[in-house]
Length: 212
Image (cartoon, rainbow, N blue to C red; front, side):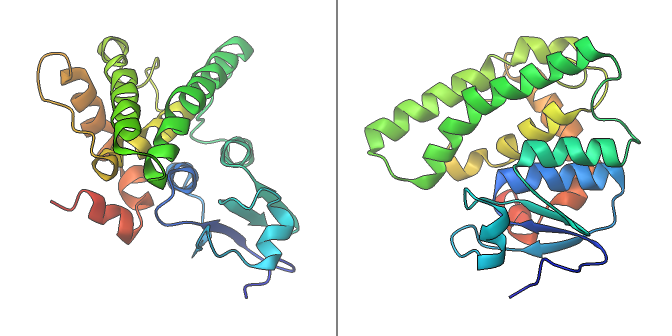
C-alpha cells in the first residue's frame, strides 16, 4: 500500500489505460510538472485512495497535504498552480467558453466512450453507440478547419480532453475514413499527437494502442 500522508512531493495515482487519467498527465507534461506517476488499477483501489476518492475513480492527485480527485478539478488546479503555459484563457468570457466546450465533450463523447469501453452491451447497442460517437467526431471537422486547436489558436484544456479519446478509437473499433471531410480531423490528430506533452504523457500500454 502506498501512503498518501506525509508525502514531500507531488504524486498522481493514474490508471495507465484510462482517458481521464491520461488528460491529467498531458497537462502535467505541458506544464513541465515534476511528479511521481503511480500506476493504479481503477478496479483494485487501496483503502487510502478510496478515502479521498469517494466515487472510487482515478486519477487522484496528492500535493503534499492536499488530496484531490476528479480529472477536471485536477486539470484546473494544475493550470492555476503552474500558470505557464496557460491552458485556460485569461478573460472570464473566454474561460467560460472553454469550460462549456469541455462540458460538451463530457456529455457528448465521454459517456458513449465509457459505455463502449466497458463492453457491457449487445452488439446492436454497441453499433449504435459507435455510430453516435463517430457522428460527434465528424461534426468537429468544420470547426477544426478554422483554428489549429479546438476553437482556439492555442492548445487548451479542451484538447487535453479530446486527444485521449481520439487516440483510443481503435479500442472501440471506430475508424475514420481518410477523405476530404475528415482531413481537418486527421490534421488535428497529427498536430496534437506529435506534441511533446502528448508523446511524453503516454503510458506503455497507451503507446501500444497505436504501435503500428
